[in-house]
Length: 293
Ligand code: GLY
Image (cartoon, rainbow, N blue to C red):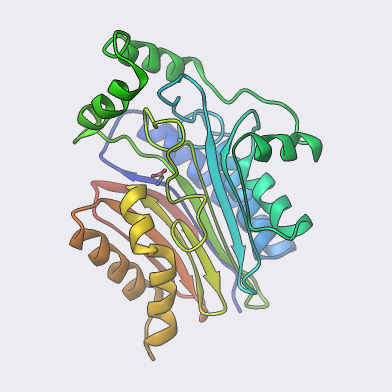
């Protein structure tokens, strides 16, 4: 099998810093590809997503959006084609949530750890404390909070829904890879929505929603997490690959986007099928992505 890798830095409308974003995405893809040649799919996915998390221009790890209360809480998940999986939800004070998700997969009997205990797990496992907030994201949060400061927490939650309508800024990151043994892995990492309500859970830390992988293929999704969740979108895309006799990754990604369209939701999908075909589709202005095959 020819090794292949595809990474994304989120489906969104065109914004500023696109040049910087795509540079970081290409870099992450190239580093992931080198690891894919030397090691295997899961190592490649982890390292590529770590590099995406290190970019201040992408909404994952460093540079994650601040939540409504000014804190950064991140979600990440990783999965292999043997159905082993790990995820963290609402983790704080780490640089690389994807590596904590990998540690959950490799070292525990569990699939998902959430909240402060996920953070405690990471620190107890030796992941250093790290504040992922950047100055531009803090400034953005302060600017927006001018609108909110007179409101109670519950008023803020309803107000934020109105504020967000039509103004979503996305930037979840993800990667899917297939190695020379045909091993497949997929991973996704995010800082959530801009002004994420604390406690809100999106799709990226949920196996079957933001990420899924089986021997039929691997998928990473980006976009409106609530709709991706209710569709179990990543699982549906892999089901499509599993059921369709001649289904290819590109058809499967397009099928997934049709599902999102049926709910008037936006997003993007990357995938690789068991034959090593690459697929991607999106219904936003752009899906920042790169692949090597
Ligand atoms: N897709 C990322 C999120 O909704 O949290």
